[in-house]
Length: 483
Image (cartoon, rainbow, N blue to C red; front, side, top):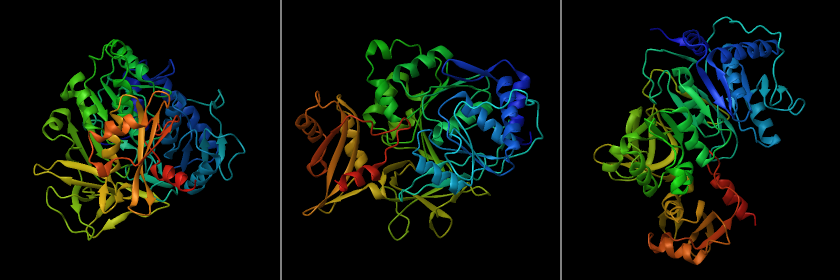
């Protein structure tokens, strides 16, 4: 079958089963027919405000039904949805909107931004607008998320894929027409957005939590008989630490696929989930928003290649030394990825890619391949700590500290030291009244070489990672250097 536009695909699904649930959030449901009608009405409203083919529309909406209506409306006009956090500070939002040149911003109070029409959270188009079909057009890019990158300056990562698909091609993530995806992550992040849009276009019922809650995630899987769930290791850890009667009290037998990605998963945590749900259901993916390539590994494969993020499933991968020369299996270097399709997978607005001759690009990660072609990741290059001539990888230290039962989350950074150049500093999210620092260091000392141990430990009671598992390591370090 030939490719069709995203709106055409959604309309076909609605015609086949108009009353089937499309999206559920906060106890409210939009059927397939209702989603199309709401999207068409908002599309006409946006068109009246100047939105056309190829225009960016910034979507600063929280997890909600309106987020999906906004995306459908934007695609319907052939425009490009540009998602950002609904909690962005005004200055950062203004920088991104200016960078994108967004015609309209959904989720911003009127008058708060220059050069764009602002429609607030909860905005509804006039009820008398027609909700019937519009001319079928294809957006040249189906999404344009943002990333601060290592510089801290925002950039857009504009997808190289148009908003069209061939319905007969199998989807990579296992979504089924009539299935259900539970999504507890924030939709403005690339992973949750990709999974939700992919599930919606496959005909799955997308069940979105307003915000992550460990037990509510399990309850949603049980209630909606979800066959796919998207998690990050931070969520997995919080679920695993629920009381057994709560964690095991929900029927998860409908699950076929548990995806986890976006941050390193400690081996002990992955083993817990494999033991709980079975290795055949646990899937991990490694890729950048840029989508030059990706790796996938099942739980069964992982047991034979403990710690790996899988073998390449798209694109070419290479490990190279600082001079850009390929390294053999078993040697760690920088991970380079090459797009093998006949089209660009992305373009930056506000940044330039890091490249090597031959079409290779780097996301800044370190890693190595084993003899069987499985990729293992170290840290990002800018995160590695050089202390007394030794390379220390924060993710390794974090994985050990996170295993402590009283630790909610942890971020390890390097701080300047006159003697060693840098020393390991652990920022630990925990209850100071119940966590003894000396006990934590002793716990880590049983599992880490002495040179990798934190020299200083800071206890905080505010979240270090967001619901997508992301941590602003450079920002945390900068804040401590200013003290």
